[in-house]
Image (cartoon, rainbow, N blue to C red):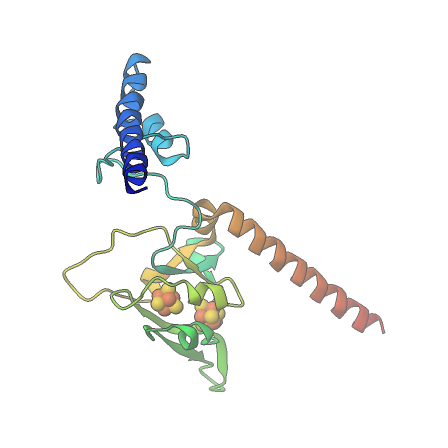
Length: 204
Ligand code: SF4
Ligand code: SF4
């Protein structure tokens, strides 16, 4: 019984060993580069890849799946010189963040002193962030999204401020196209329903 298990395990190891070299040979016979080429990276990032390979990081980097997440960023709409920050500084993300690494200062109207729905300051301590994605999951405005950027190590304390956290909606669309489309469709449907409700109230 034990012998059978060992043989099965060795069979798996042998298959991985064979596939590793077979894939290399097939690419070599086709005159293509499995390493250091766009095609090779695409192949090794896909489910069609076989065997074991080394990723020659940082010279090459595998394509990350859409749902990969690391640190969060804040989304703004519109052009860079006229940012429309989606965040309303509601504070939900800060409340749900398990290690409590988000802190927000809300904007107040200079004359009335009443709160304005946008952040004056927004900080995330990236050294404490555990990349759970709760902030993005709970944000009601799709204002905070998990990034694909992971090379953020530094010798200093990594606290990101509002300026460093803000990224355009087009970047969000680039890294998470399916997620962006889903959220965008939902937002548009909500806005249309709100406009229709206001219209019918005005007519009444
Ligand atoms: S990022 Fe979202 S959840 Fe966090 S304060 Fe802004 S609007 Fe609220
Ligand atoms: S990813 Fe998790 S730990 Fe990091 S800021 Fe968001 S809620 Fe906090």
